[in-house]
Length: 527
Picture 1 (cartoon, rainbow, N blue to C red):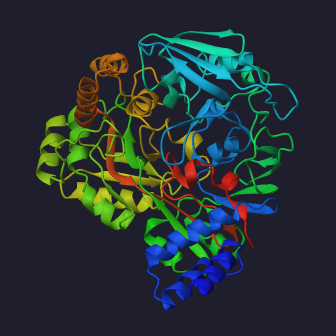
Picture 2: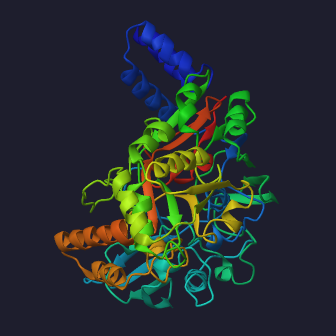
Picture 3: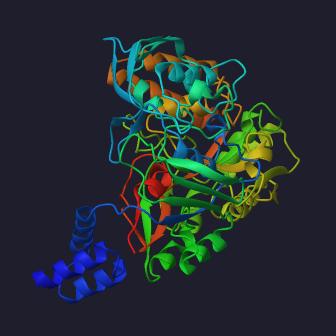
């Protein structure tokens, strides 16, 4: 039997038989599913990455108004595009921890206030220019200037000064922060020549691929960077094809038009996984589907209106009917147990009577307008309809307006006062709070401004006593829970899928979906 299993493993690893066929044949000779999965994963790793060929990716979450400027990346499509050609100083390892990338090493002062990043030598941009510490400084300055619109602005606000000494980039923080390396993994902070000041949309970086064709909202084509500084990036060509419609994206995978897709709709994920030659990949993490309200705009500036909406949300129904088991219940904060310093709080349950009480107390009478789209998160219009029904039982009128997929991130999110959205989470609480809830953050999409919250966030960065820091984060979570513009009914698993034509998927990859956006780069053509 061993010889037969070895035969199966080699042929599966080389793509000669499908994963499903391998699992079926292994089961026929008495191998459990768990053991067969382990055997196959070991065989794929042993076979090693194959070079060349084309990988096609079906991408949800992109529009015609998307920019190639990494500072403005606001959805999964944009981030996948910039990931192809750009790199940060450091990055998350697949199963935790930090990996030096363009920084060869990093260190801090004993109080975690001054950080030094030694910049890697011998790295060139795709235009042939040598990358230097000056490029790093210029990049960080562009993301932190008064006029910047960078999604990393909330992170950069805590930096007091930056400078270059030889091959080192040195930054001093206003307050100590032991999590600073995690903040530097932010996908906006890709190093560009002269920081991108000459042309931030030129798509010139140090990454493994070079952009050859760009049709925002339609299609992007990349070719392998022949001068890339490390052995990464396996396919010769990568095509990112924008398919925002869930049904069309799944159909493209099933028909072989694309080799992988992001954001498989949870309601059909089980069916997709049963299809021949397709594997659905699930990873739990910090991602969450949300309803966001501008706290500085009527009627959402009335906290009783917000509490009415929060008590009128049936979270368990959302998880059951929208996530179909691919996630968990939320509690009106962006933090869950995937964060290292998480503290549980009492779960807010659906209570139509409390919702009605706060609605009456608020004095509001006009219907609430909620804008939504499939582009905000899978089945968001269905989630909006469920919310409408649960609020109706409390006597709260909700109107739902379905917006076009294209343009949702440029015309609705962060502009309209109440809409559906999603966050993929961040590695640490400081980064999540700094990006979306600090008063001065450019991506404060709930317009939440709370002086006590800001003070706690800054103080927590400087607190090296873990127990005290954990309590500060718990206090911040409670403030958001009771006073924020975030209604978070559920934390979603990242659900992606690939065909057996490609290999190399890493299960439970840390960070964001589709292997922290690295799947097109890390995987290879196996058949």
